[in-house]
Image 1 (tube, one colour):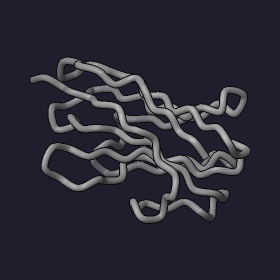
Image 2 (cartoon, helix red, strand yellow):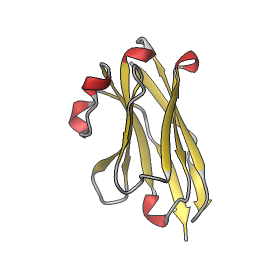
Image 3 (cartoon, one colour):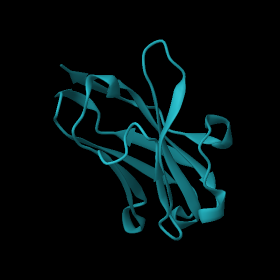
Image 4 (cartoon, helix red, strand yellow):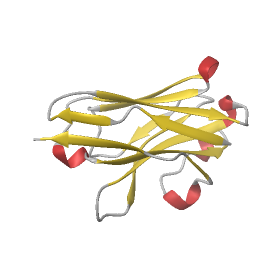
Length: 125
């Protein structure tokens, strides 16, 4: 599976961005797709996940109510809509994938074998 993430940029606090991740190389609907982020000097952390078959989603507590993960099977793309951004959301955002359906949803970096290159999100105060 090859993943390509894009859509990052500089935004003021309170603003919005939408990240996209395009997957290729495997049937998109059979993947669990996750978004993770890594802030400067910190480890990579879970943000959101979606099981493409079944559509189950889950979020880190820090982004619940502000971020929405969704997918488009026709475009082999998963999105992360980020609203009400805060300076602490500043990080490199990575999309990741693992095979499976709803029962394969995981929240840890080591559970995902496929990764995109990351896209930088900077939120200014």
